[in-house]
Amino acid sequence: MKNEAYSRFLKKHPTFKNTVALDLLREKDYQTLDSEGHVYLDYTGGGLYANSQLTTHQELLSKNIFGNPHSYNPTSLHATELVESARNYVLEYFNASPEEYVCIFTQNASGALKIVGESYPFGEGCRYVLIFDNHNSVNGIREYANAKGANVQYIPVVLPDLRVDETVLFDELNSSDRGCFNLFAFPAQSNFSGVQHPLTWIEKAQALGWDILLDAAAFTATNRLDLSQWKPDFVPLSFYKMFGYPTGVGILLARKDAVSKLHRSWFAGGTTTVTSVRGEKYYPADAPACFEDGTVDFLSIPAVEIGLRHLKSIGIDVIHDRVASLTGWLLDTLSELQHKNGTHLIKIYGPLTTNARGGTITVNFFNSKGKLIQKHLLEKEANKRKISIRMGFFCNPGAGEIALDISTDELSSCFSRPHYSDRLTDLDFQQCIDPKASGAVRISLGLVSNFADVQAFIAFAGTFINK
Ligand SMILES: Cc1ncc(COP(=O)(O)O)c(C=O)c1O
Image (tube, rainbow, N blue to C red):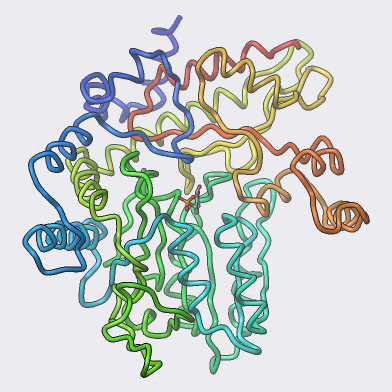
């Protein structure tokens, strides 16, 4: 049966054959996945690391002595050398000219976004425009914008594909005050629907006087981001999403002309050239140092270069093609699953083809009477089968509210209940707007996903047919 399905799959996606090197790599370098019987389908949550990344990093640490890079002694200089090597390699990996971009190490994508939020020169009459489909760490920047009197405006995504109507977007972007600092934020790939929003927006919006914040956190694990072709002003991302290890390191890639607009409202160890207590004065260092608070994670940062070299050795295009084939198969097969009475088991939120979308698929399950199957039942069954998937809104409430048709009125009536004025738990929210507020189920593919993984999910889904 599996072979028959595999033959049909290959017939539909013949280029998958060109990616078999990844099957071999999985056997060799990601053994634990199969030896422990895991079906890992949460790559948008976090990528997986290869054993070889760990051993290379371990060897580096065990054979060297590294001191705090803020000094000039031998151990410190060695740490600095590796941090700077990783920084240069990050720029090289993304094809970003060091003349044009700086690479700022952060704790994660959220840390990078916070730097932009707190230091962007929002002001009265200036604007922060973002699309509904954004991660909360991008949504959160609206609090900085509001606090400085800027005008915050959301552009909706539209059903069924959860893409933006470009006419609506550019009507908005066209109506900005060019004398102001205006920031437009969108993700290169949605962590909710997998939609890849057009990178062509970058240049068009810049021509209208906007700075562009391109959230690349969910994009770069399976797609090429070439910063010699696309030139967003700010690009945040987390490395664990690309290659699993290390956690706790991200970057803000920022264009030098854009970075010069940022102003920080504090200083910390390492961010100044000279600081005086008696003289009550400090002099900010140049970027990237002025944005790297305290000591960077100098033992983990060399593992970033190891991870990037690992990806490079595989080839991001091979990973992309493989994920696209498996995504196409999942989309087609899940859409076809029906109960005996002809009703569909699964509703997919977002595009049903692989055109301009990545390997993140968000769905809900419905019984034969068309009623939503509760997440805790799905989770319990998935966990029994060692299938790792994610439930909820994935920190992307905007896409979720549109996909699940949760209206502004429903939300206002919930939020305005007196006992919810200051505090609202997840559970309260679900009771308020039940059952839609339980969100959806996310399946996401990545570097070493294989045909068996997607078949395991399809088999799991099949157990809910006729329920
Ligand atoms: C699109 C997107 N942006 C930002 C983030 C935030 O990343 P982190 O939690 O690593 O800061 C995520 C994490 O899931 C994401 O998917």
